Image (tube, rainbow, N blue to C red; front, side, top):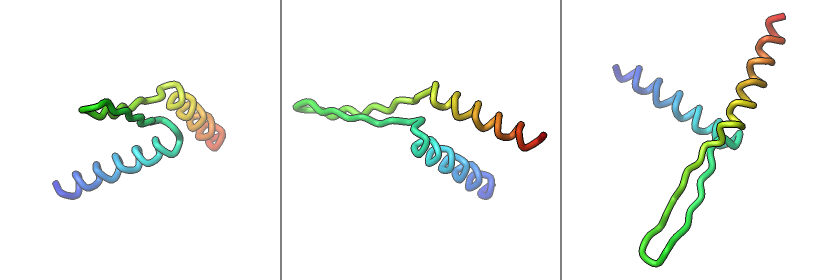
Length: 63
């Protein structure tokens, strides 16, 4: 059970790191007098473009 959780955490860390590197996720922050706001946005178009590129490369390797 511990190995499964460790493996899941490792996969999550790799996806998050790759996502930040490729520009899939963006953070922004702002603050008012009494509060701070942090916003995370996901660029779905960039994820789709990168996924399509990866699929094309894998298909080219298979031929």
